[in-house]
Length: 225
Length: 77
Image (cartoon, rainbow over all chains, first blue to last red; front, side, top):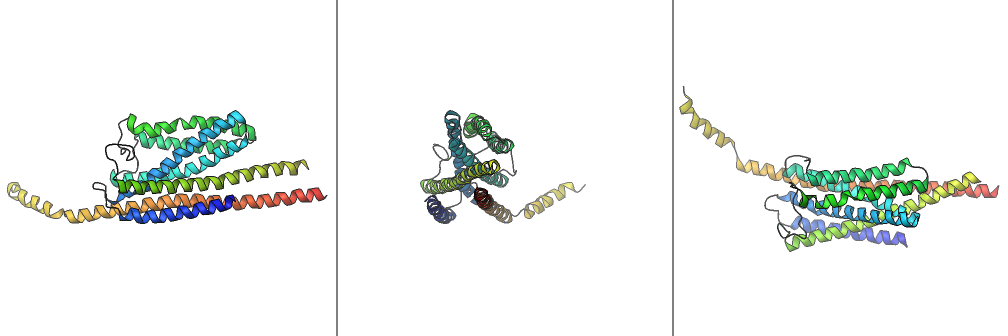
């Protein structure tokens, strides 16, 4: 059943992205940026999906600490790992955009710096999990670390409002510099597609995590026999 | 000595050397190349991660089969 859901969702993602690639290519160029502004159709949805994943990881980590059920730990590791890939997409596409528009690959701007720190923190989460052998200890330490790592997420989101920054202001929920309706619609469709892709990859990763736990159990059984 | 007479000539030559159309074409090309690289990078990262998941899935399945057969053999003995 889960396999079928994954296949159907993947097909839906492929259709949405292919359709939207055509829609994006048909949009007029942005007046000051030219064609490169279209990178936002991957840059922003990737960030939004990764940030949502971080929030899910936070909730799952808290639930693990409260209930001690390992399914929440499995969910936390699955969403965090997929989130790392999406955050990497966000950072790399942003860097390419910056090279064209600002003339530099990177600037130590509050938004860019906090986003990079966020990626490093969640990469640290994955490294921490590799370093600990005992499952309960690993899950507890990782849950506490995940809660700590999440503190950077609001900083990333609000950095462009709290500090002076060269990063563009948001195009959603803002009065100034907001997208025209047809541009926003295309961005919303890509947002849905990227969230679906995130959900599919998380489901696959979660299944792997559950299978890995079964393998660990079988290994212990084999050793006991 | 000839500075005064040469200045307008040099200024004219410098102006003639700057071709706004060529500059604009170059800017548009860099802009388009950046967009393509951005899309390629996004897809390479996501496809790479998906491939990593696929390889891990195979490895886990093989390991599962191996352990199951080991448990079955141990139980037979």
